[in-house]
Length: 267
Image 1 (cartoon, one colour):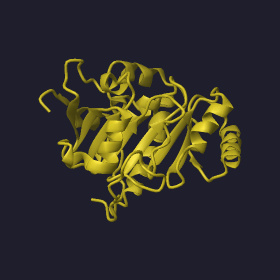
Image 2 (tube, rainbow, N blue to C red; image 1 turned 180 degrees about the vertical axis):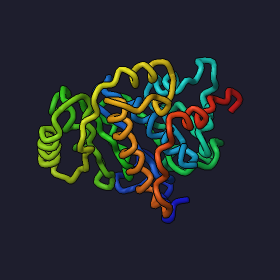
Image 3 (cartoon, rainbow, N blue to C red; image 1 turned 45 degrees about the horizontal axis):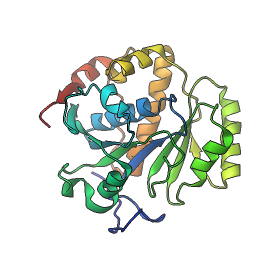
């Protein structure tokens, strides 16, 4: 359990820039679609659950792409729960106002979702995706975003939010490092960044499109490169929680097939 859980006051209206959610929260955002935002958020949620955490996955994207990509059938209720190793993932579809109520005012228990250790939020592709305060923001770009749009999203991020930049598709690490430092300089604040851009992987795309966990894939080539990147992002979330035990090793693909038991339609 977290050594120093993040707490917040009850807040009216939109969350002020210096407030924090009622539980540690990781937000995945991008200005445009098609950059693996949902794929990465789902994979990080699964990896956190594999460590034994109770993960609340909130999708505020109207397309609800995350639900189908996690294998949730269309007829499933708005709240679905999945066992993932010793942990669980509870998936909730919500409008942004509902997400604010859940994360900043009421908390998951008050809304009948049950106690959770960490929240992962998949936002729609828009410039306001990174505007929730007190979270770990994973901002994803493929390098073709209009510079002004990406910077607008990042400049609107509250000062108490930690930002990590992620570049998808193949780019020399030195080029990406230069670009990331340029973004930091223009926005005028420190941002971490994943040093190695995440390459395209046909195996991961196929698994994601079919609603299968990418953790069950054979770990080689570009697939392993992507999984290593996801591992780094999940570890960042773990550290944000103030966990006092070591980060658990990545489970093997064979073990992972047992870990992911499927969705409980009665949740």
